[in-house]
Length: 150
Image 1: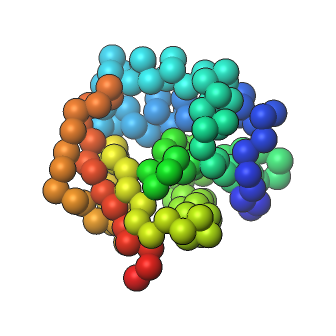
Image 2: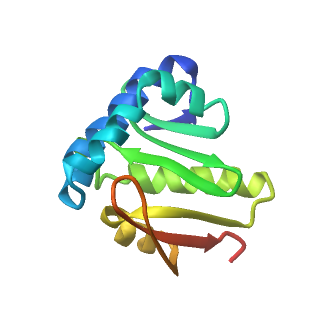
Image 3: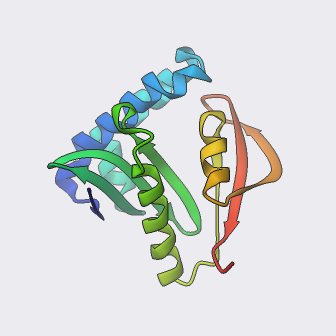
């Protein structure tokens, strides 16, 4: 597995990973009615424009992009691993890589709003709920954070 920075030619593959993960994995906790606007939103064109504003990494296996994660300021964004590749350490590797990027950029605390689907994964990675929940486009999200200096 290779973890590397996003390149513009990755936009279609990253869009496909995000959309497929929402349809297969996130649909277990969120309705397709709520997910559909997000699936539409993450078009290749939108992925390309978002990655001009963020530090984005991709995970690649045998030339195929199977995961993505981004950091915007101190906030994790668009973290997805393709359904067929979940549970194989790809998400863990992406998290560790983006945390290293954050530390290199002198960011000491990383935060984000997690889907219900991913809370237990983040907790295994050392993230903690900060007591806040919010309603987002897809539905309920749990705010989480991690002090990277510990």
